[in-house]
Amino acid sequence: MAPIDDFTSYEHYLVARQAVTENAVNRLTPTDDQKTILIIIGVYTAAILVLWNMPIAKIVLSPFKLLTVGLHEFSHAFVGCLTCAKIDSIEIDPDEGGVTRMRGGIPMLTLPAGYLGSSLIGAILVMCGFNIMASKIASIFLGVCLLFTLWWAKNWLTRGIGIAFIGVMVFLWWLAHGVGLKYFVLFVGVMSCLYCLWDILDDLVFRKIHESDASKFAKVCGSCMSSRVWGIFWFIISLVFFIAGILIGLAAFKEDQQTQQQQAQGFGW
Image (cartoon, rainbow, N blue to C red):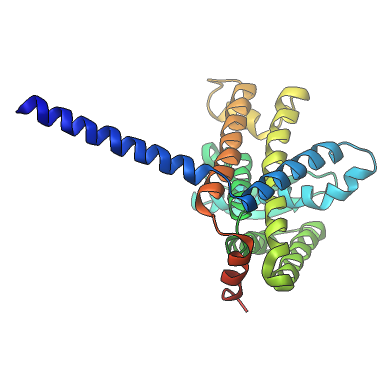
């Protein structure tokens, strides 16, 4: 009887595996509303890439670039706090650069936190951009990040960017039960992910800046790998975050637009 029992168990295993596979496929198959979101992500991506280096049109992206720089520096500071560092200041400059000054901490954790942290934040925002209520929750999270950035800010540009975007999110929260907030959160998420990916390539492949986070990280690690190798490694992780954000959004939020609006009405004021 043992062979029959083994065969029956194997049949049950195959049936269970097929059910799991079908469920996974169903969860990742986009609904009509999700197809619209995927198209919007594609449009956002194309628009950002086209406008990125256009002499005049890129001004449109400047506030969002500064916001993503702020998230990059916040990530450095946040991990610095977790590793008992003293955060002296966060500064963003008009050339879309930034610096976080801290004392102490663990450089092997704080240095990669800028790129990886901001790309993770971007992926979370992309995921939440599939749902109105999730976008509201994400906007609270983003607002908290900006408030901490304001706390550490030491120049008026950093403060201005934080205050301006908090104001935009408050306004969109009230507009049409947060429908606009959903697309804003989605855009910021796509922008943050793309900015991280482009910045890594720009710093380490195209221009190879010697004082990049990756070059400093390579020195801390004893030059076991070059800064370019570390940069490629971070690039891959950031890309995985971006793709994961989209896939989790597809699997987690299947409600149509009307259902999302009804759910969002009961969340917040």
